[in-house]
Image (tube, rainbow, N blue to C red; front, side, top):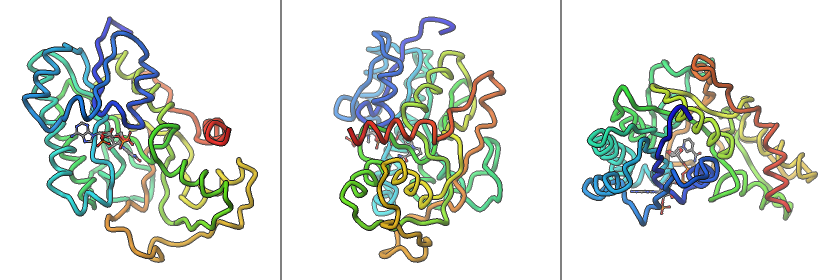
Length: 283
Ligand SMILES: NC(=O)c1ccc[n+]([C@@H]2O[C@H](COP(=O)([O-])OP(=O)(O)OC[C@H]3O[C@@H](n4cnc5c(N)ncnc54)[C@H](OP(=O)(O)O)[C@@H]3O)[C@@H](O)[C@H]2O)c1
């Protein structure tokens, strides 16, 4: 680290936060669960930051159920937009900065190339809109890390679902018309730590590499597990029954263009990390 930094992580029991705690791994880091700190409560946020006096607040708390956000837009705004506003206001009072974790869903997915950090945003869902408002709460000294298709060994995620279904040879249908970069929390956490260490500012796309659609991703997992791939069927988003309430971007691929400009290497190809995770989940 360029200097000794106290780090406070919100949403401390989430899947990314759990790996952040492991990667930061030290007495300089405190993680507060939802129960310990509700980021929608301005006075609680102020009290926590005054108490722990962090140099950096990593906001890993969010209302991440994309479909539920459509049904609960007020709650989505409270957590995904007001929460970051509260954190920025409190952080700046004590001279701290905020790292806001954000998402590919701030884009509409219509671009025919990977999205770079400076591309225009145009969210199509309540989740994406409220996460974009969370980004807009940041100030010049703060940091926005957009990631996509997060999964890891903690919490519930699509990787774990596929592994569980594959173990019992259950039929699976996955769309082949939504493409993105799968991102593993253990790899994303490492790059987040590096960004904190160099006191980076601005917006960074941080994902594993290798564009893939959901069908291909599921296929890779079955192959790595040595399970029959004929239990897997490719469908289009239009064939989802029932249709999902929230619109997903067709193209979710985030080009990690800004990382090399600050001397950092983007996280590895997803095929480098996936076998390790699959093995861990199968053992
Ligand atoms: N999951 C993805 O595919 C994905 C993709 C791109 C970007 N992201 C972003 O990456 C970040 C981390 O996502 P994740 O997958 O690790 O999420 P996660 O596992 O759902 O964790 C989010 C955590 O936030 C907590 N939380 C919810 N409301 C809160 C509040 N008002 N105050 C404090 N904590 C609260 C949740 O606690 P409870 O469970 O107790 O409510 C949960 O522990 C989020 O910013 C998300 O938007 C995620």
